[in-house]
Length: 64
Image 1: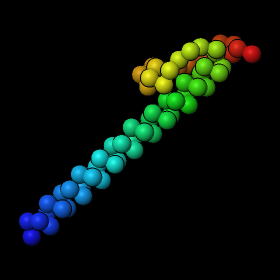
Image 2: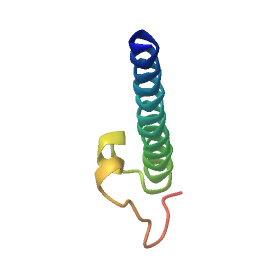
Image 3: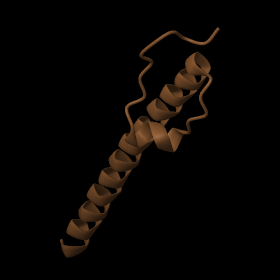
Image 4: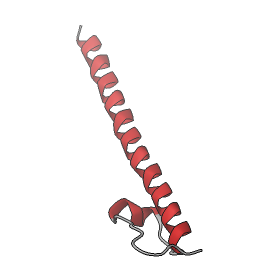
């Protein structure tokens, strides 16, 4: 019985780890696309790291 509880705890930990990694990956992918779009529209040189912590906004004329 004790072994069964240990395997269930390990499975729960593995599922939790997968969920945490999936949430981080989703935020990272969203920030990548936000940074890429901002760079394309403004000509700036932002990084994905910038987009994770700063709200990038286009507030004027876009660069053509």
